Length: 128
Image 1 (tube, rainbow, N blue to C red):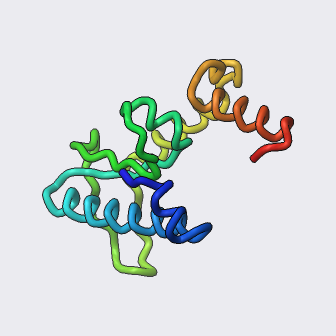
Image 2: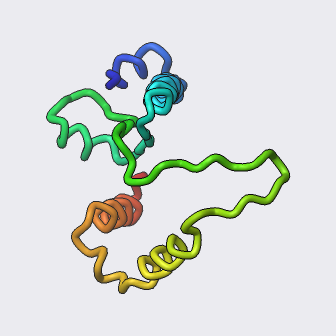
Protein backbone atom coordinates (compact mmCIF):
# COMPACT_ATOMS: atom_id res chain seq x y z
CA UNK A 1 0.00 0.00 0.00
CA UNK A 2 1.09 3.51 -0.71
CA UNK A 3 0.57 6.83 1.04
CA UNK A 4 -0.78 8.64 -2.00
CA UNK A 5 -1.19 11.95 -0.17
CA UNK A 6 2.55 12.13 0.54
CA UNK A 7 3.42 11.26 -3.05
CA UNK A 8 0.92 13.84 -4.39
CA UNK A 9 2.43 16.50 -2.12
CA UNK A 10 5.88 15.88 -3.61
CA UNK A 11 5.06 15.05 -7.25
CA UNK A 12 1.78 16.95 -7.73
CA UNK A 13 -0.55 15.48 -10.37
CA UNK A 14 2.18 13.09 -11.59
CA UNK A 15 2.18 11.44 -8.18
CA UNK A 16 -0.80 9.17 -8.78
CA UNK A 17 0.78 7.87 -12.00
CA UNK A 18 4.02 7.22 -10.08
CA UNK A 19 2.06 5.21 -7.49
CA UNK A 20 0.34 3.23 -10.24
CA UNK A 21 3.66 2.49 -11.91
CA UNK A 22 5.21 1.30 -8.65
CA UNK A 23 2.16 -0.85 -7.87
CA UNK A 24 2.27 -2.36 -11.37
CA UNK A 25 5.96 -3.26 -11.10
CA UNK A 26 5.43 -4.88 -7.69
CA UNK A 27 2.36 -6.78 -8.95
CA UNK A 28 4.26 -7.99 -12.01
CA UNK A 29 7.11 -9.30 -9.89
CA UNK A 30 4.67 -11.02 -7.55
CA UNK A 31 2.84 -12.61 -10.50
CA UNK A 32 6.09 -13.87 -12.05
CA UNK A 33 7.16 -15.39 -8.73
CA UNK A 34 3.75 -17.04 -8.30
CA UNK A 35 3.82 -18.52 -11.82
CA UNK A 36 7.39 -19.76 -11.33
CA UNK A 37 6.22 -21.64 -8.22
CA UNK A 38 3.23 -23.16 -10.02
CA UNK A 39 0.59 -20.84 -8.56
CA UNK A 40 -1.73 -18.42 -10.29
CA UNK A 41 -1.99 -14.65 -9.83
CA UNK A 42 -4.26 -11.88 -10.99
CA UNK A 43 -4.26 -8.14 -10.45
CA UNK A 44 -7.42 -6.40 -9.28
CA UNK A 45 -8.22 -2.68 -9.47
CA UNK A 46 -11.11 -0.95 -7.76
CA UNK A 47 -12.36 2.14 -5.95
CA UNK A 48 -9.58 3.00 -3.49
CA UNK A 49 -11.73 4.14 -0.55
CA UNK A 50 -13.89 1.02 -0.40
CA UNK A 51 -10.86 -1.29 -0.36
CA UNK A 52 -9.05 0.83 2.24
CA UNK A 53 -12.12 0.44 4.48
CA UNK A 54 -12.11 -3.34 3.88
CA UNK A 55 -8.42 -3.60 4.86
CA UNK A 56 -8.98 -1.10 7.72
CA UNK A 57 -6.17 1.22 6.61
CA UNK A 58 -5.77 4.88 5.83
CA UNK A 59 -3.35 4.10 2.99
CA UNK A 60 -4.69 4.24 -0.56
CA UNK A 61 -5.09 0.81 -2.15
CA UNK A 62 -4.35 1.11 -5.86
CA UNK A 63 -3.84 -2.51 -6.87
CA UNK A 64 -4.28 -5.86 -5.14
CA UNK A 65 -2.77 -9.09 -6.46
CA UNK A 66 -4.52 -12.33 -5.58
CA UNK A 67 -2.20 -15.37 -5.50
CA UNK A 68 -3.33 -18.95 -5.15
CA UNK A 69 -3.88 -22.31 -6.73
CA UNK A 70 -6.14 -21.94 -9.78
CA UNK A 71 -9.03 -24.33 -10.35
CA UNK A 72 -7.46 -25.22 -13.69
CA UNK A 73 -4.01 -25.83 -15.13
CA UNK A 74 -2.65 -24.03 -18.14
CA UNK A 75 -1.96 -26.14 -21.20
CA UNK A 76 0.97 -25.52 -23.51
CA UNK A 77 0.15 -23.69 -26.71
CA UNK A 78 1.72 -23.82 -30.12
CA UNK A 79 4.27 -21.58 -31.73
CA UNK A 80 3.19 -18.09 -32.80
CA UNK A 81 1.06 -18.26 -35.92
CA UNK A 82 0.16 -21.94 -35.45
CA UNK A 83 -3.42 -22.86 -34.71
CA UNK A 84 -4.01 -24.57 -31.38
CA UNK A 85 -7.29 -25.93 -30.06
CA UNK A 86 -8.42 -24.44 -26.79
CA UNK A 87 -9.50 -27.25 -24.46
CA UNK A 88 -12.87 -26.49 -22.86
CA UNK A 89 -13.53 -23.44 -25.08
CA UNK A 90 -17.11 -24.46 -25.87
CA UNK A 91 -17.90 -25.02 -22.18
CA UNK A 92 -16.36 -21.66 -21.27
CA UNK A 93 -18.39 -19.86 -23.94
CA UNK A 94 -21.61 -21.49 -22.68
CA UNK A 95 -20.86 -20.32 -19.12
CA UNK A 96 -20.09 -16.78 -20.30
CA UNK A 97 -23.27 -16.68 -22.39
CA UNK A 98 -25.34 -17.74 -19.37
CA UNK A 99 -23.71 -15.09 -17.18
CA UNK A 100 -24.17 -12.35 -19.77
CA UNK A 101 -27.83 -13.25 -20.25
CA UNK A 102 -28.65 -13.13 -16.54
CA UNK A 103 -31.18 -10.45 -15.63
CA UNK A 104 -29.45 -7.21 -14.66
CA UNK A 105 -31.50 -7.11 -11.45
CA UNK A 106 -29.23 -9.90 -10.18
CA UNK A 107 -26.44 -7.30 -9.89
CA UNK A 108 -28.43 -5.06 -7.54
CA UNK A 109 -26.70 -4.73 -4.19
CA UNK A 110 -23.36 -6.02 -5.43
CA UNK A 111 -20.18 -4.02 -5.34
CA UNK A 112 -20.49 -3.46 -9.09
CA UNK A 113 -23.97 -2.03 -8.73
CA UNK A 114 -22.79 0.13 -5.84
CA UNK A 115 -19.88 1.47 -7.90
CA UNK A 116 -22.20 2.40 -10.74
CA UNK A 117 -24.63 4.15 -8.37
CA UNK A 118 -21.79 6.02 -6.67
CA UNK A 119 -20.30 7.08 -10.02
CA UNK A 120 -23.72 8.23 -11.26
CA UNK A 121 -24.24 10.20 -8.04
CA UNK A 122 -20.86 11.90 -8.42
CA UNK A 123 -21.56 12.79 -12.06
CA UNK A 124 -25.02 14.15 -11.27
CA UNK A 125 -23.49 16.22 -8.45
CA UNK A 126 -20.92 17.68 -10.85
CA UNK A 127 -18.00 15.63 -9.42
CA UNK A 128 -15.79 12.97 -10.88
